[in-house]
Image (cartoon, rainbow, N blue to C red):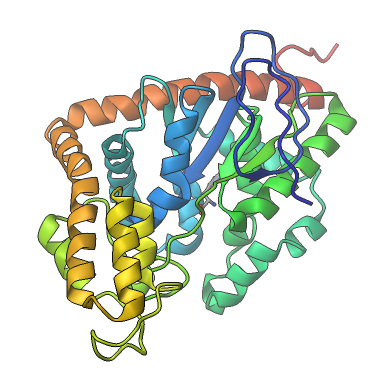
Amino acid sequence: MATTVNHPHPNLPPSRGKGTQAHFDVLPGAKPRILTGIRPTGALHLGHYVGALKNWLDLQDTYECYFLIADYQALGDHFDDIELIRESVLDVTLDWLAVGLDPEKSAFVVQSYVPEHAELTMLLSFVTPLGMLERNPTLKSEIDSLPVESRTVGFYNYPMSQVADILLPRAHLVPVGEDQAPHIEMTREVARKFNRMFGRVFPEPGTLIGDVGRLVGTDGDAKMSKSKGNTIMLSDDADTVNQKVRGMFTDPNRIRADIPGRVEGNPVFEYHDAFNPDVGQVDEFKDRYRKGKVGDVEVKRALASALNEFLEPMRERRERYKADMPYVEEVLMDGVRRGRTIAEETMTRVRDAMRISSYTSSWS
Ligand code: TRP
């Protein structure tokens, strides 16, 4: 049952959005840690912005954030296109920098550069009953949609590796979309069981579900996704945005501009609400649209210009960083260093607790 996260830390603002009960203590003066991630399977789009990045931007000052580029996890359905994963690591990094995630504040961690992820996944898999994976509704629907030859052990085990992603930096909170909630629930169960068996190593992390949630595709589909060809990319240029907006779905029953149209569930208006800061203009459009007093062309033109205004600063930053790839690589290597530091600390505790390959417990 979703309840609000109870922050035990006096300096923290009340949590926003929905969340689940977390169980952890944070030392006075320390910031609680956040881990969240993205699979690098292409550049990012407006759906990522609305469903994740916008939320992450707000969290950077309050929390110690680890933003994970989960390239191991991307192997799950892209093991036959590793070059795409490799390129996407940089694309995602550029998109993160472009939207304003700050690598000085937050660590950008590439999962495969911190192989402790793999070690922890393996160790945790021995305390995790198979039933946890079998019951996971997100995993089940993803597996069902995969062709049989792609249903690998690695894919089936990805929620386990996601549990390890979260427990490796001993994260207290995980901001994710609704579909990821079962994985965070599983993380809490695994943490609880590990702690019970071996002594307390892991916090039981809470889920922070963003306020905004999901952006529909330009075709009105419930979800924006590259495979459906209904995206607007954060890196799209102005002409591309104009053209995509021109082709957007609107009210299918409105065949002429002078008949009343539906605003609710109309993707053009959903985007206006999400990205056009001129609320007066949006309200006026809605009013005229309902009365059949404005054409789609005018509403779309205003949307395209709002989107371009929103995206322009990101495009500029993206170009600036792209022109300085050594800096971008340094951002990643610095993030990896920070990720490794805490990962090594955690793994020492885990090995000691389990008394396996432990450097501090001798044989005698
Ligand atoms: N499964 C997440 C997604 O596809 C990405 C991810 C990997 C993640 N590791 C994570 C999210 C850890 C939160 C925490 O979007």
